[in-house]
Length: 391
Image 1 (cartoon, rainbow, N blue to C red):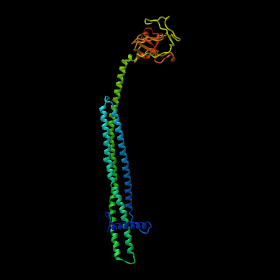
Image 2: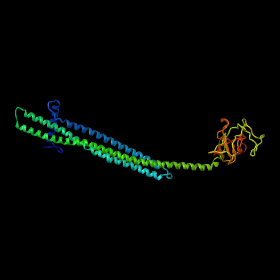
Image 3: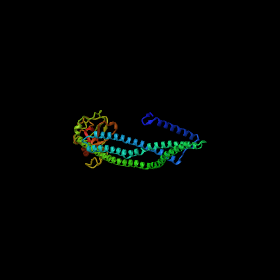
Image 4: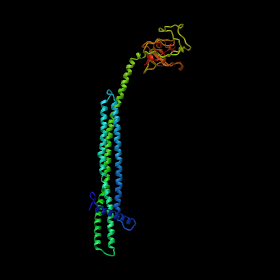
């Protein structure tokens, strides 16, 4: 007999076609109620549990793979972020070596986390799920063999009920029935033993999967927590270094302040007030020659304070004064309401009588030496702020 294909002859093909036809015919008779069907309620319940178990396992596998993909994505994002930090971290900054080491340790921690999740959770779940295709195929085969058994049983019964007894046909039908029954029952018994065991095994699989997941998560986050704390400590010390450097720069800038303030004082509009200084050893102008302006400030009420009690910082200034400044560069007065200043002079600053009198970049006050000698605010004058420094 000629071969139809590799391993398949015309005879085998004909037998398979006949089996399919017989099974289809038997299923139609069963649905029409003209033939009874072998049923096993307990086994069907077991099959329902198997189907549920297979669906749940597939969903768990899908979600675990999605989680691992997210871990890989986070790993890639973390690596790029850490590499960015290492690249822009100047070598002279505090903790450069520690930062480089933390970048490597962070990358290694992510890699180890991903690999352990794959090996200890995903692979064991894959092994568990690899059983299902074979069991599913055997359940389908059992279904076919059960139909063959029912068909052989019905065929044998119909021959026995015939009016003419043909012993040869009866014997052949009985033999086919016995063979079909044996195949069906052997497969049925195997599945009845295996399915409950497979159903119970899901507990151990879930425990192993999530226990390993939780254990690796705990270790990963603990190690990442240490690395994060170390990074935070380095950043804190780097900030302290920055503040120290800024303080040193400010100190240097303060020492060189006079050179920085050699720029001209801010321009002022025509003077709006005239000062009437009290005679004193440092006053060079007489009342007849002192310049005047439209506004006269002539308050001569002294402020009572102990001699040499003008202080600043932790001490208190006399009433009416805001703070004290030190003159950093000589200033030659260009108007009658301005103070003549020498480097090192101390000036007590007060508020302008009216906000309209204040020009940007200018202050009003009394030289500390004049105040201590005369206790008279009428000898006040304006001066450029950028020639002084608050003390």
